[in-house]
Image: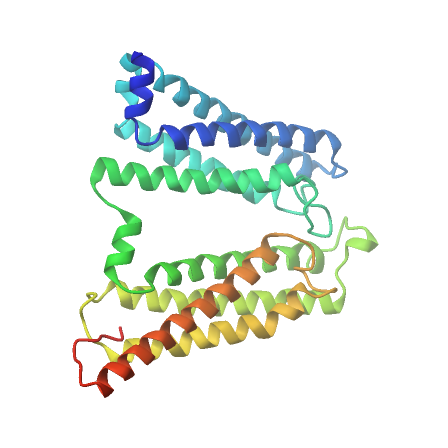
Length: 312
C-alpha cells in the first residue's frame, strides 16, 4: 500500500514508466542494430559503441527512478528535488546524443546509406524517449517551480507555440539537409559509388538547408518580438510581420517540398528531413490560416463598430 501511495502521489510517475519502456526498447534495438550493421569503419564502430553506452545509461537511470517510486523512504531523497531535475537534464542530454547518432546514415544504425529508416524500433522509440524527456522536464518545472512552459506560451502571445514549433522544425530541416549533404556530397572518401550523391540530390540538399535556415530565422524573429511585448499590446505591425513571414514560410515550404521529397530528393526516404519538411509546411499553413482568421474577425468587428479586437 505504501509503494502504491508513493507512486500515485508523484506527478511524473507515468512519464517515468513510459521513459523506462522507451529506453528498454531503444537499448535492445541499438544492440540488435549494431550486431547487424554493415558499417564497419573505425569511426562508425566508435559511434555505435557510444550509442549503446548512451542507451544503457538511459535504461539504468530510468529503471532506478521507477524503482525509487516504489520505495517511499528512498524516493523522498530524490523525487521532487533538484537531484531529480539534474537526472532529467542528464537524460535529455544522452537522448539528444543518441538520436543524433542513430539517425546519421554514416553509422548504420536506425538509417541506411540512403537515409531511409532501417530500424523502425530504434528510430521511432529514440525520438519518443527524447519527447518524453522534454515532457518530464516540463512537468518538473511546473510542479517544483510553478513555471508552466506551455501555459506561459499560450498566455504570453497568440500563436507563440506554433512559432516555437516552426523554429524547431526549421532547425531540424536545416541540420538534416546539411548532414545529408556532408555525408553524400562533401568528402566522398570511403563511400561506395551508390552512396555518392548526384548533382540533383546535392542541389536539393542545399535547397533544404536554405529553406530551413529562413524558416528558423523568420520564426525566431517573431518569437523574440512576441516575448518582448505583452499579450494585450495592440501592435498592427506585429500582425503584418506575422502574416507576411508565415506566408513566406508556407510558400517556401510548399515550393520546396516536391523537390525535397521527390524521387531524387534527400527526403524521399522516411527520415528526419521528410518529417520536418512536411511538419514545417503544415505549421506554415496553420499560421497563415490563424492570421487570416484574426484579420477577418477584426475586419468584421470594425465594420460592426466594435472595439477591443487586437491583431497582435
